[in-house]
Length: 393
Image 1 (cartoon, rainbow, N blue to C red):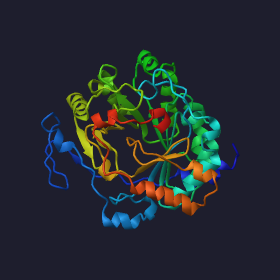
Image 2: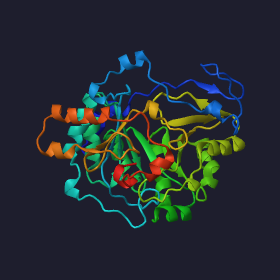
Image 3: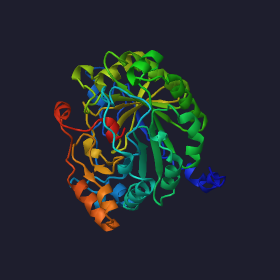
């Protein structure tokens, strides 16, 4: 790592923090729409469900994006998720089929220069947040160089990463110097034996050390992604919430989603309403945080806790109306919806020498074809799609 990196990107590591959103206090308060709130139980859950709104005209004027990133429903796509690799050092059951999966040959994956060129095209058109995913992004040998180049793109405000945390602890200091500003760590259980069963690998202790290392380096919050599955880890929901009491951790409970090869079954799905009810019965002083229209999670604070708790409700309460996300897969395919099977290659025209204007036309046409919403969960389960390890977490 070059010694000048720290100074070069000191300004970027101090990335703009959004001002704290005003939140309504449950137990009898009213939100800005006059909705009376109360204790959360099965009958009152609807009071805490948010439908994705649309951005105000002022917000749109303040954050202009090119027509390439605006779909036929007026949604502006300012968030790009880039998968760096299909390879992973874990074999999580909900991500990779039990029999494994055929991986794309390395020469068919995007190179660093191709990633940066495409990312620059998106950022110059209005994308201001990029998240690096995989597979496992930290196993890519040039991960620091990728972060360094992406963080230096003019107009990019946030460079984030989703990682399993296995080798993160030793790489994180240099990644932060290279501009990595937000961090999500996947962790589905606090029990080492369960971890080994779910991931088909050892490594629970290393993930916990990576979480502590991220906190020590000043990541606030450190986001923990927890896929909740009935009969496996649904009994740990409140144990995860306890992590937020003393540490700046945002636990993000994710409804189990169907992808090719992960043997999805509705009986394994623990819906948001049930997860929230368990939290409310154990913890007092739950407060709903006002969400941005493009937010995927329903966010809560708990009185006396440093951290926060969130629920990603892709199956039972989708948030398609406010979706601002696009995906660039490791093989160069472009995907406008996580659950949609449609993909278009950006790698092939790139390697055939097309210019940026032609690439923008391909991207814009794909964005315009994006549907208003994904299908219901049972239809998604029957629709061919790639395994999650191919798509990117």
